[in-house]
Image 1 (cartoon, helix red, strand yellow):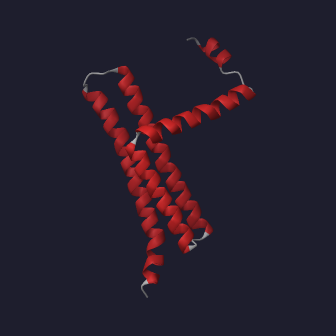
Image 2 (image 1 turned 90 degrees about the vertical axis):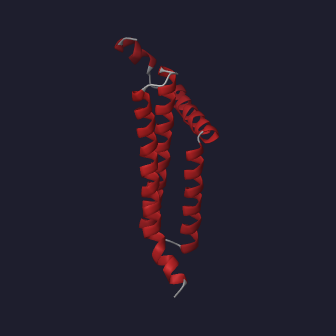
Image 3 (image 1 turned 60 degrees about the horizontal axis):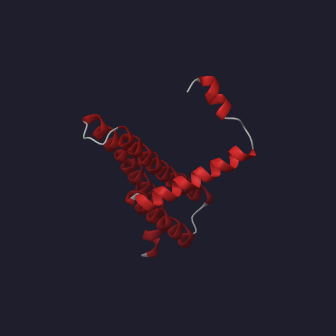
Length: 132
């Protein structure tokens, strides 16, 4: 598709806006129904929210926890997209396809570890204070 035709398909408007919302919901629904790692990160995020409510963390701590949680979910969604594109391009084993899928998975794993470390740094003082 040439650039002019692509721009014609990208006209701004209320219909496009509502379609964008629908596509977002479709993507989230697909990922949560089909990606185990997204469910695991979702459970971790729920745990973080519960602990933040129990310990009544500060506004800044809430902000950091929310940013970390949304970041890990966004990376997992990108990983799902990478896997789908690789599967679309080839159904055969190829070393580059493996690298793409493995690196996408690694990005999700790294973000998950980051989320866990941030949660530990924030919650550890609260947990220690429980035992004093």
